[in-house]
Image (cartoon, rainbow, N blue to C red; front, side, top):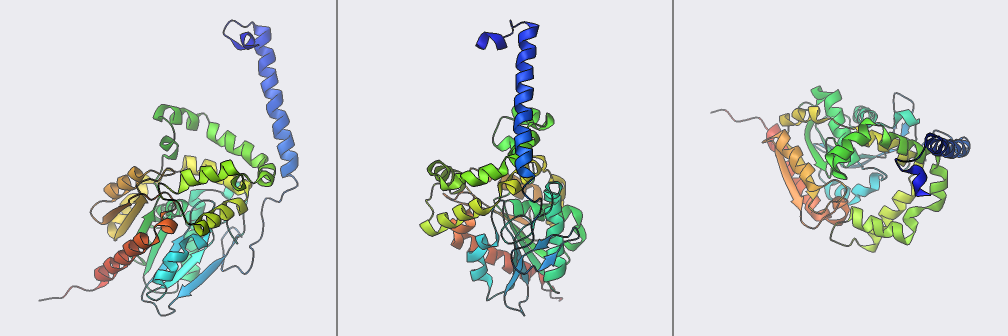
Amino acid sequence: MSGRLSSGAGPRDRTAAASWVILSGAAVATLGAAVRFLVPASRPADGPAGVRTDDGVELWTEVLGRADGPVTVVFAHGFASHAQEFRYQCEALERRARVVVFDQRGHGRSGWGTYRSATIDRLGRDLGQVIDQQTGEGPIVLVGHSMGGMAVISLAGQRPEIFGGRITGVALLSTAAGHLPKMEMPDRVAHVAVRAGLAQAAAWSLWLLAPAIDRVAPFRRSWGRRWLLKQLFGDDRPSPEVFSAVQDTLTRTQQSVVSAFYPAMVAYNRTDSLSVFRRIPTLVLTGDRDRTIPWQRGQHLAETIGDGARFVSVPGAGHMVNLTHAQAVNDALAELLDRTETDAQPSSSS
């Protein structure tokens, strides 16, 4: 059988093999499209929405903490997660600040748009509209984890004028500014995959088959649980409560959303926006056992931003460092708020 696909195969054999591949792919695509036809491309928010975006998507938001807080802290969560991933940070800051959390589009209790709206730049615009509609007046500190950090970086490129004005500090947790494919494969392979559109084609196929994948619920399976432990939690085993919460979040996030955002993550590259953060105190924090976005990416972010950035690498922590090493993250955020308050004080004249 393998001889038919070797370099010595005749034209008729190669034509037959190519035809089989094309027909098989068409059959899968047709089946997937038939299934996807039964699934709506969008859904309303689950519960009261706090923000309606300019493309009509309702984002669930919640305002916590001190109504008269001297600063508003806005949290942007990561991929296939929701606002509750910051519950320990919210508890730590509620007595000190006004806190705004929200679910990104397609995640948690928020609504969804179309496949084409699944971009990091769109998330950056969403974040800007949450700021405009939910933060009132006064200084703002942004905290973004993973994909949420990418949204913060994207917003900096879109609206640099509010950084150093309304936005007085930023925390980038377990995130990167681009070139994500290179984290999992050699540079040459990653370059070819992106240029050839293989990642986008794979994501499109997954989107077509998303309802079937949702039914399988891979993260409820033993092999899916093992992958979660390895990929998201580093050397330290999470508590049963934390692991169950992350597992539940990933299972509840529709595969159509996961597969829609995947090519956006692959194509994402906003290193040009990092200079904006030189205007304000910036925290870059990562776990030194992060297998999703290696700690070196965080170090590169801090070095690119320059002297105003503080880099923190938490020993033994994986990608979900804000859940597994909450105290380390809370202490770093408290120090960031201290820095923003110090910078906001007028200098005394002699």
